[in-house]
Image 1 (cartoon, rainbow, N blue to C red):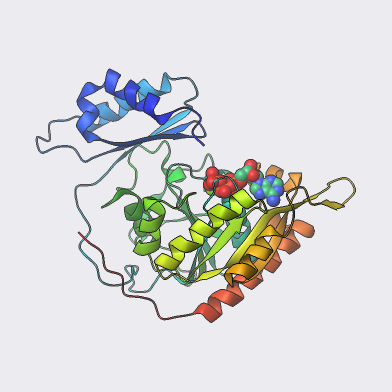
Image 2: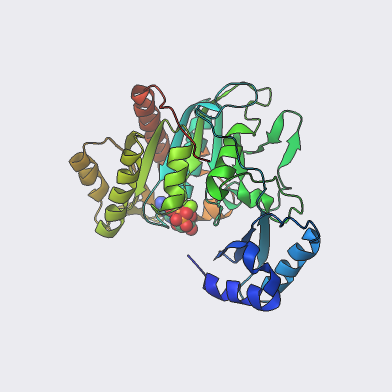
Length: 358
Ligand SMILES: Nc1ncnc2c1ncn2[C@@H]1O[C@H](COP(=O)(O)OP(=O)(O)OP(=O)(O)O)[C@@H](O)[C@H]1O
Ligand SMILES: [Mg+2]
């Protein structure tokens, strides 16, 4: 959801810093946070990077509605073409199961569901990680109560994930305010996500992850396709609300994964019915069951339904995971997580060879 047209930010930057035009790769604003992506400095080497960062920050912070500015400078190095699955420095894949949580439509509760599925996995005693792949609108800092966390640190064993509620986490949201962000290599989005998979020390001495969830950015465009093609996803879970409009987008998301030969593990219906916090009765305001019918039609498993409940939004805003508490919401997430893990284990197919183009 763009709070302000990104074009206005771009115009402001070009007005205040005309020299920046050829390096300006992308400007986006989501939730008051402006993200600016710059190409590497040119050959002259004479540019003062720090001054440029400060200039960008100053120009955008002056605009109404901008609360923070992140400046990300791409690295000059392109990744070497790879023909194999990304592995960690240790030579092992980052997790036994890598599961993408996706939806075509934005705002259906993908990040909320991904975070709570992670919580449900922790509750089952699984070593669990989460990659927040939404570069422009990261949710993990808020959902896990880490908005004031220090940036990601690099140690001898790799980038150290943050940890909250037993989940190991990486997010570009943790680069906010960090003057020396982890350098991104190669194509912007896949580069970052790939780096999260290969250079993060997921093990950290606790043993390899059982499950790594990837909270996908909304939409079914090039960025999503690049992630789906670029990393060895074991399967994808599609989150949808029951309305037809959201289901149309869910179909697009399914098509995206099918195109990249990633098995769709099933569908989760979020905001399935309104669970009244006062009387405990359910009301089917969006026509409950649309996603279940759609999943049947598509021949994919239906993994569960999550009610619409104010306490889920409150918990999410307060950085708590309801999946780790008791009650109907926790039970709903536990059921969906078990169904997801079961289908992921059975989908257990040999990983395809992934070829990267230079
Ligand atoms: N079942 C639910 N009950 C109540 N509130 C919910 C529920 N699911 C999600 N929400 C709320 O809806 C809003 C959107 O959720 P969320 O950010 O998870 O969506 P998203 O699909 O990840 O969005 P985006 O497309 O922007 O990434 C949040 O405020 C969240 O707390
Ligand atoms: Mg999200």
